Length: 549
Image 1 (cartoon, rainbow, N blue to C red):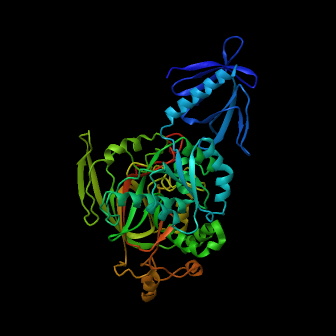
Image 2: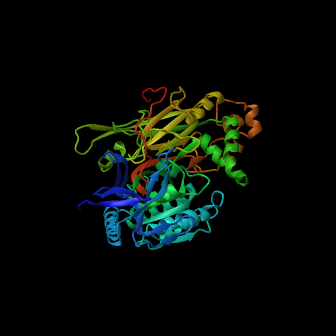
Image 3: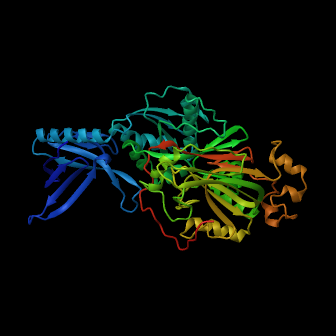
């Protein structure tokens, strides 16, 4: 389309406005001919244009003036680029005919550049999650944004656990362009499990087969953060703000996301996008479930309690290194909007690979369009571990802005495996504290980090009989029931905070898993979110850096 331009007034001041193929720009010219101010809005970030003087906050109000039109658009907060707000500008044309031309031209350009924008959404609200504010957040702040953008919504308030997952599995979703959850990570997990399960059922793929290649989901997922934990939203948008997330949904952003499938033997246990953690984080979650009456503060209480216990657990870790040759967990890059590592991974992820959890071997293949040989190597380590964490993303949160693995990527088909071996309380505290500052949390002698495609963990003693931890622990001598087999005595602090434990529990995106022996495999770009990744620089320097082990 040809550029469209004319003079428009903003607050009685005359501006030269031009609408081209990518942006809407207006310029005020000084008397001497020099530009006094220039404002530019990308067309993809214009939310709506309406005739007259329009207000939507605190309630919708339209004043039909003959020559005015209002443009609503995305504006980034000054102090934090990732936080978006809805801004508006009122323009006055010379006459109603010119006003109508501007509204028509802007509407056509928005439609042309907004082909990925959703027209109809299925919205699930968890009224009980977090502090019970999900309904207020949606109806007070989000509903009018969707109405302004012309999006039709079907809203369901859930009344029980897994209701959203069951709805997605059973109902016809052909009329929807996406699903949205208003809640926390638990609500997002329900939607994710429902969409992945539905896609595998339609493709006749068994989810219980740990070696199956899963079918990607066509519908995108939107997250309006309103829960006690919103890790997925923070790691993919950069801020836990409902307005920001709603604006990403409206403009139709799309961010692919890797998913970990967790199996026990030949049975699917869960899917994970944030963290699969054994040891410290598993113990914290398991203990916090006993204190739900405390609210979100229970995580701090249980974290301090588990830290004092200073438990370690024996096991065998087998992992398949990701032979991408493109990145590693300590290369100081950051996965940001337009990340080249994630963009270039699509071709590599299309390469067929054989996955086998039973064979610790070394295999190679050649990536498409390249003569470079890529090595997939299975490695194994046995020992006593303080924590074993595997994450497909940085797992950043407000308390830890860089997350568990700052250089992890959202959609490169890999995960970062962080192994913390047995250490003292002081040493482990150093590791934890580095999650909150700019120091490298991996630059410690008892910490190893690898970029992997798959993981297999076997606890020692093995749980072949699938007995629960407490019953098995009670039948063993104290020096075997305790996680640190070498120690025959438990410390005073450990006895004060709780008895010895034979093995830990796995924390899978905030839910306790029933088995200690698991297989984990990364499925590249299995789902898509209404997001674009965190906006910001790709590289962030740390005070110390060494090639990763």
